[in-house]
Image (cartoon, rainbow over all chains, first blue to last red):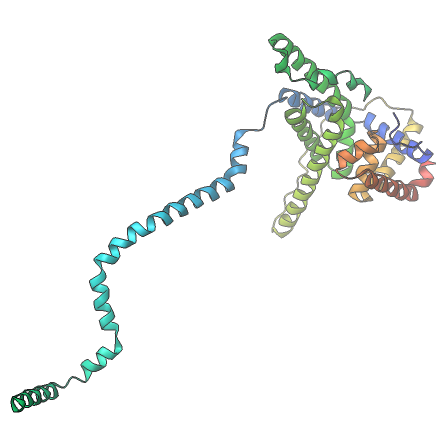
Length: 131
Length: 208
C-alpha cells in the first residue's frame, strides 16, 4: 500500500527508508517496554476506567445540584418561618416605629404642661358660661 | 491493513447475539489476538512518531502506552479497520497533552529557586544492545541521514510533522491521516506538501 495517494518522489522514498531504518534500530530496552505496554493494554481490553474518575468528573455537577436543592428547600421554608415571627414581634415593631418617629420626639422635647392645663381650664370655663 | 479485513466480521455483531458462552469466549480471544497483532505492528512506528514530537524517550513510551490502553479499553470492539486511525488520533491527543503539561511545568520550574535535574536514568547495558545493523559505511551514512532528518523534523510545525510522519512512516492514506489528525483531507494534503517542501529545502542534498 502506498503511503500517499500519488506516487512517491525520490525524496519521500529516501526519507521513508531512513525512518524505517531508525525504527528497525530501536534498542532492546525500548522494544521490551513497548512489549510490556502492549500486554498491559491487552489485559485491559473491554475494561472501563476506574469509577473514581467518573465520580471526580461528575463532582461539579453534583455540587451544583446539591446547592440548588438547598436553595429550593430554604426558599420554600421561608414564609413558614417568618410569619409567626412577624406576629409575635408586631407590638415591638410598633413601639420601635414610635421611638423612631422624629416628630414625636420633638413634641416630647417641647412638652409644656402648664399650657395644656390652661387650655383645659379655658375649655371648662367656656362650657360653664354656655350652660 | 488487509490482514484486518478478514477479522472485521466477528466484531460487527455483538457477542451476546450468538447466545453461546463458548462462542463468546472464542470471539473475545480472537479479538484479543487481533488487537495484539495490530498493536505489535504499530508500536515501534508509534514510538518513533511520539519521539519525534516529544523528543524524550520516556515520555514517548508513556504516550504510546496510554494510547494502547485507551484503544484497548474503549475501542477494542470497533471494527479492526478503524483501529489504526483511532490509535493515532488517541496518540496525537496524548502527545499534545504531554506537550502542554511540559510547557506548564517549565513555567513553574523557572520560578523555583532550585531546579532538580531529571537525568537520573542509569545506564542499562541491555538498553544499549544493538539491533541487527548494516555495514559500517552504510551505517555511517544512515546515521548522518537520520540525525539530519530528526533535526529537520523537530523544526517543523507540529501539524506538518504529524502529517509527514503518519503518511511517510506509518503509511496512512489521506483519509486515514485526516481521521487521525481530526481535520479535513484538504488540510492533510496542505500540511504534508508544506512538510515535504520544508524538509527537501533543508535536506535535499542528503536525500537525492
